[in-house]
Image (tube, rainbow, N blue to C red; front, top):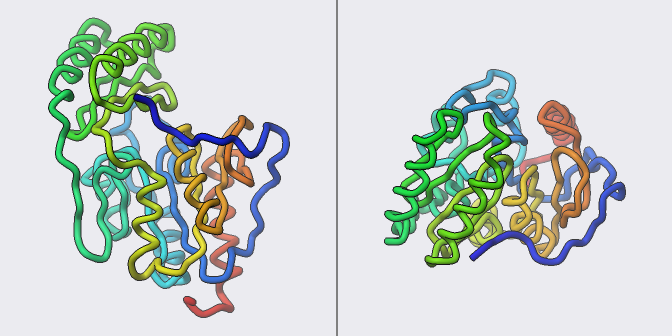
Length: 262
């Protein structure tokens, strides 16, 4: 099985930068890697950042708490990087979600055991490959050995075809995860509870895994912002890189300065 957004609404070269002013009663949904933080050779090389931390604090206050991070990383890893400042988090592509009522987590699919063995063995065969176990999913990163892309993807596709796992292809990574949730469903779930209920969603992300988030934002009256190179996407706007995202968010905070949290 594979998962990401279905109908492409915007072709490359069509996307302008997003407006500085957020919609009235907006809610921000932010990816981490490639959006709030640059992608590093190893995931564990991403850590706390003073500018990002201050900005997230300012946005949380300005938006009355209507800010969530929606990422493929594990919840514990996100809390490490964000220093526990963001309460509302959808981790492992939404399989773990922390909101107003605590933490909801799916159960690992039994087919993960076999996928874990296969991907771990592949990583042992090439020291440039990085195996990552998130309990609810397993991933193999090939950023340090791009020449291994075809072999890694082929192995992941075979595992997906022989199981009920969802194959999620990302930026130089192939991931097999427990079925049932995605980033778009996480956005929808947040918008059904305080403080997000009734808000207009704005989803910012860089990867194919974020297309579900873009689609949900559009469906629920908001929009998506693609980060990085132009490509077919369901986002309505685009920013060049992480620095551009932080600059845009900073401008948004200033624009919100004269408003109430509502």
